[in-house]
Image 1 (cartoon, rainbow, N blue to C red):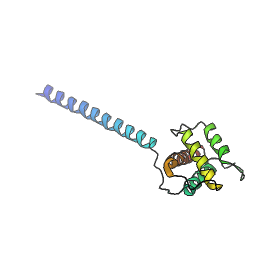
Image 2 (cartoon, rainbow, N blue to C red):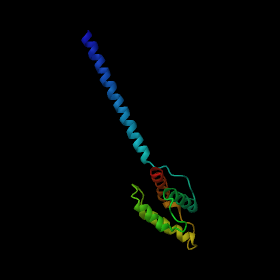
Image 3 (tube, helix red, strand yellow):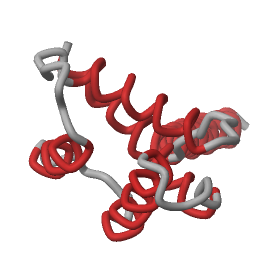
Image 4 (cartoon, rainbow, N blue to C red):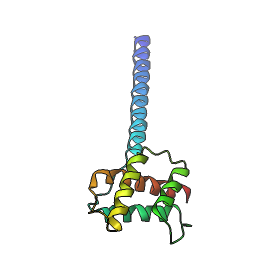
Length: 132
């Protein structure tokens, strides 16, 4: 009987350790996936979206001079080697639309590419927090 109790006790210990490992690896996987998902702020107009991006740039690169241009900032963001899942072509298109709107050549741009701009802003803020 003692051998059977010891075998049962060892089995419970092994299975509980396996279950604990599964739970811990599941939590690690959940944390990794959660850190990769970028929550985007709810901004509606192009002015709000680009103001958010400007603040993100200033937080990440405090040495930016006041007379900066958007193409300078975008090229600097590309050069920082951000591990970013952003679509640079869509960002460039949204930037061109916004500049045309800002200088009175077109009406306010559609918010179709604002998610890419917001994603870049959030990633820049994360990058700035890591480096500071």
